[in-house]
Figure (tube, protein in one colour):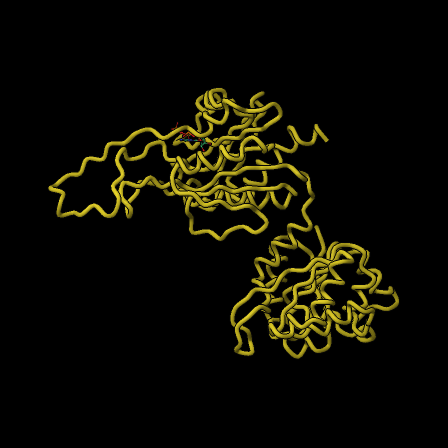
Length: 400
Ligand code: CTP
């Protein structure tokens, strides 16, 4: 179990730190909260104690176990120090050696990763003194989470908002993940394609794009350089990933072909439409012009994976998906050979649980030399991790 120290300083956004604790705990981290005296005026230590299930330290002489020299013991025991929100005052103190709180003391004793998430009014954030302090801390390898822009507690607009707890937790998770795919260039496709027959209507499928998004996020956390080429989805855009939004299968083919030469691993999780309307009409087809029926002739789309496999280079790893109504392994193996794949991920789309719009899935991963891993129903996030770990164990680990 990885362990996170969370430092909370005086800011109206301190309430968001409660949610940070909750989300970290949900992901299985041990969390201990350290607060500055002024931070307790915004949120009570008791709130953090209940959510973290750990005693909160504010005052070294009242709260810390000094027989055990607690600031050193905690600095050695914990894996990461996150300070969120970090006030201008605290950042200033940390940049010039002042240790007038237990939180500041820990900062100087901590030898592992420190992540600071500032929150304040934009004039304060942009003040040259604050910027100089941040630059100095960056130069000694302290990492910063850039504040969001938007409406601030004081009623002004600008930079200085604490980012969402979800984003901050993702940054912590990325920091604490082993870099098993460090420097690998991975191209991932995800989501549905839209095949238009006029400017406002199209054929598509219900793919949510979640599998592609989770693959991209996990691969980024594993240290890979990731490009995600995705059809339009309702999902957030992942940070730290080159994101390319496309519409049609032919757009996707063009973007994949542009990049394929330079990548180490291709994972085609997109639900590419196999057909598109033969004729596309500009503007909107008016219904008055149609009697009872409108004939839509379909033509086959290019098979992107099959096309790019023709020029596959030695050492490249290609992964395909196979969405089937029943888990037919023979059909998947046939596809694996036809498309010159190294791995195929077989998933069932006819189940109520699992499939296109669901949050979970059950898959069979088959390698070209017939190593097989069957999963039970897992979240799409867990499935993404399984696929990437399979690739690491089978190929990447052996090269290193
Ligand atoms: N694929 C592709 N280009 C297409 C269609 C599919 O690159 N025009 C990719 C998909 O992203 C997937 C793999 O090829 O990785 C398998 O898709 P497909 O050939 O459609 O196979 P199945 O999903 O098994 O289904 P079916 O043969 O029934 O279409």
